[in-house]
Image (cartoon, rainbow over all chains, first blue to last red; front, side):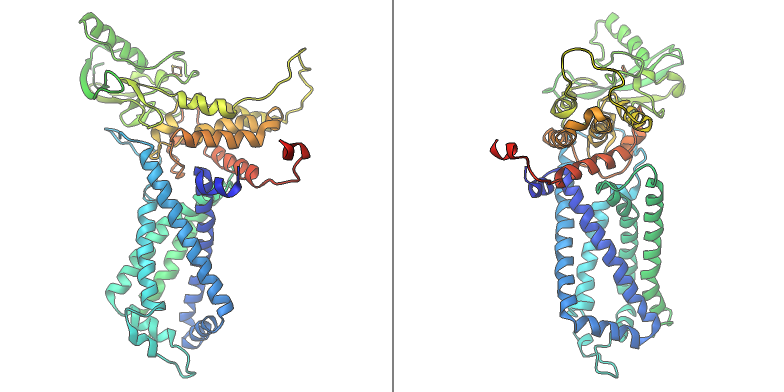
Amino acid sequence: MNILLRLFTSSLGKKFLMALTGAGLFLFVIGHLVGNLQVFLGPESINRYGHFLQTTPEILWPSRIGLLAFVIIHIWTSISLTLENRTARVTGYEVKELVAASTASRTMIWSGLIIFAFVCFHLAHYTLLVVHPEFRDLQDAHGRHDIYQMLVLGFSSYWVSGFYVLSIGLLCIHLSHGTSAMFQSLGLKNAEYACAIDRFAKVVAVLIFLGYISIPIAVLAGVVK
Amino acid sequence: MNVKLRVWRQKGPQTAGQFVGYEAKNINPNMSFLEMLDVVNEDLTKRGQEPIAFDHDCREGICGMCSCVINGEPHGPEYKVATCQTYMRSFHDGETITVEPFRAKAFPLIKDLVVDRTAFDRVIQAGGFVSVSSGSAPDGNAILVPKPDADLAMDAAACIGCGACVAACKNASAMLFVAAKVSHLNLLPQGKPEKDRRVLAMVTQMDEEGFGACTVTGSCEAVCPKGISLNFIAKMNRDYFGALFKAGPKPAAAAEA
Ligand code: FES
């Protein structure tokens, strides 16, 4: 049977695609964090970085298209598998005992969908600039788009920062399970390093959480202004 | 000791079922859970009522026939123990125990606590075998098996196919069972000739039976009476994708067929 057909129709194949795209998105989350943390180096650094990305279409567009494809495949496989999983048990149990299953593992679809809603807002906010069209006119001394100023203005709003922190919290929960499950689904786990992977997933999730929330907190605390 | 039972009673696949309350009196704490049900059934029979139907056979934890979800846990509260080896001393006097059948679309209910697990048989038939040459008995030591491989294959082979993994999984997934059965043969040189075909066929059959997919919650491993490890699922995934992506030159005979 055809490989693609198996990948897109079998349960293991869909899990494989979900894990593979999850791995790509995980790397993006880390790359994006590293880029954003430049805000602590001052306006020059992050504005130069932003200008470089915006004026380098050969990096920008392949990344955007790749990310979009990954997001679509990740969400499609998760919804498709969730629906199949639902139909696998028609009658539920009277007494439900959650043996070993962590909250993160049982709520992946919900944390994921809320994160997706956040990503849509986040793009509208800082990339498409439809939430605040006036962000378009922010320019620094070199005539570049003033990303630094945009971040400060954007995160000065308590509800923007609040939704941001909440979503990053969900992302942290999602990754605390997702990162280790990804290794499992790709078949890259064994008794030797299974524990190490589980721990790695949790530690990285917390580091990502702290890294991202440091930005709105620094803005609200007036450290970054 | 005395316990109160709430047991799922259902005459057949088509009729509606409900929980019925029973009292099990003067139970010896060292009776197994099934022996306690025997006592209740004896009493029901004496009173001219229909006894509770439940699956069982060896009653020593090796056949995989006993099932039941006891207080929300397949095979009851003890770790690495099947229902037949769960003893009443694991419950306390006066406790109300809820007993339900395994629930999964792929395990249709037959009666009361008895479900049809032949879906597992069909998964085994799809690839859970090795080809042997008939004729005179082979030399016992002709094929060398490294001891760690033999031990690991034995761990996988410990699966008794009871279906507790499916019953516990929030997705009613059979991955732990299938992974154990695939790994058990794929780990051994005797299973090598059919290795790729085996994993592809068994996974396809698993999907066809309507089991869910794995979310890696770990419930299956936690309730497994034989403690089959989640790592076997990773191994099955590895074998599956290995089989899928392997594309060496095709033998000319395969092209003609
Ligand atoms: S009756 Fe055989 S395993 Fe329980």
